[in-house]
Amino acid sequence: MAGGAEAMTVTTTTSAMVCSHHHLYSALARGMPAPPHTPTGFLDILDMVWWRLDRCLDLDIIEWSAKLGALEALEHGCTAIIDHHESPNAIEGSLSVVADACAEVGVRVSCAYGVTDRHGPEGAAAGLAENERFLREGGRGYVGIHAAFTCSDDTLAAAAQMAVDRGVGVHVHVAEGEVDDWQRLLPLSRPDWLLIHGVFLPDDHGLQGTLVHNPRSNMNNAVGYARPTRFANTVALGTDGIGADMLEEFRLAYVAARSVDVTSTPDLAWSWLANGWDLMPEAGDDEVTWAAADNDPWWLAFSPGIAAVNVRLGDGDLVLDHGVATRVDADEIRAKAAEAARRLFVRLDDLD
Ligand SMILES: [Zn+2]
Image (cartoon, rainbow, N blue to C red):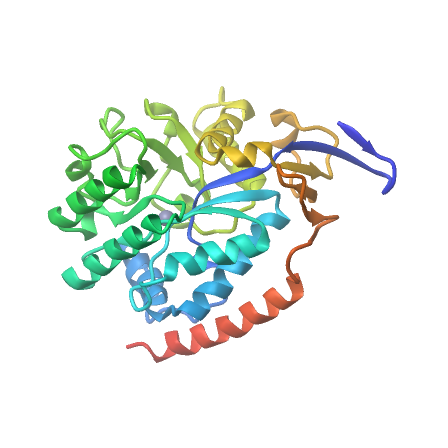
């Protein structure tokens, strides 16, 4: 703990946070027009909300959405995002737009395009091509798959092979809802895969990879609690697109674990958060100064609303100075993102 004499505040430091599963394209979704009917289940939520939103994205909307998401991550002490992207009407170049937006803000990002056969074999091919292009040009990322249940066998096999060829893992939603034939991933999965959610996986599912737990999103979609302690897999924490306030997600992960097992401790949820540093190691060298008296997980779990004061990257660059981003103009990003959101909402209103 360091005493902040200059500002008369009590502070503590940790390594910077990692969000191990995000959808930066959803940063503008807040306040979006209501869907044609109120979704009554998880598949309906995809159909009525996210699969309408992603069709309306263009590269300009993606850019401002990613900049806003990256800015808000930085303002919450998160310097590394593992992003999963889909924009079926603006696929080519989309991963570079996300990567450039994050770099401008000073946030590290690992990108993936979530391939799917929902838009026919041409759509799947275009998604695969975007993953390939981005990785071949030196981009950091995974090969993305939306989920087994929206992909043909050929698409799953092609994505898995591409990941092997490029020396990266696959980033895929798994058993988030009850309907998901995740078993088709069994012959393909490898230790460097990211398996997102796993709510409906059996305890001994046999898939290889890191299981990324997103408790707030799971609650929000009413799919249930993943109970991640039952798996042999390493567990990391993500937000599934609901911001990148990882201390907040840690607190929720703790209390969700506690709600089913009174012996669960903040150390457990903190270990999930800490596993992000294996996925994005540079964030472990970035430092956040928090407006808090202590950085013990037991202390942090019961202290809502802790503010990130300063964020210093491992190379010494101060990218957040007393809560203010230094590389970009936060007000400009918020204004441009609001403009992009207005365009997005008009398109959503115009959809069938
Ligand atoms: Zn997701």
